[in-house]
Image 1 (cartoon, rainbow, N blue to C red):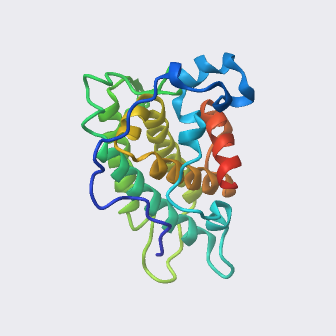
Image 2 (cartoon, helix red, strand yellow):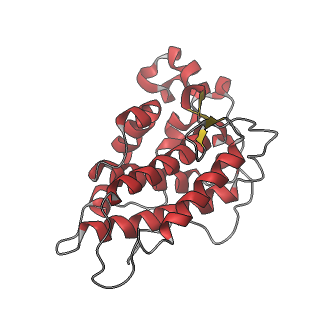
Length: 235
């Protein structure tokens, strides 16, 4: 199976970017020159033009997501799901020094929503972000390695319910990215990784929208970021 674009660096970036103080932001840099936007931006620095406009390369995100002519849709979905998992797992691992049981005793997303893990009995369990991420990545990796779910043999059919399982994978990957944006964005900036995060998130969301793999209710807390990235990066 093929893969999608790789966004990972071969080495960890050196921390060099100074954290922006909001008192230093010129009024003209705020949306509509409205100073009332400052509290929102202070809570959501990923919406600042200087950050949200950056990506690793000029690319047509929408074209990257569309099914190529003559290719099986399930195969295309599988190859991209694998690539998204690898890139998101790599990015999350690069920030593991910042995301610990001490800094993140719960798994928070935009608007301070708390993500719970569901155990084998379906019971919701509140856990630290590192543990939630470990559960998520282990679950996804197990599915990806299961030949009955993601077959690699030529001509092997994908199982019934395959799309539902891909939707579950996308749910956990989205929550991983949402946690990074909400809790660790300054850490991402410090490591100069925000262009990578933006590019990966934009492609991930565009692909999810293209194949209806993301529930609007799940993505709603980051809809402002999705809209901003869409206006800058064309999806």
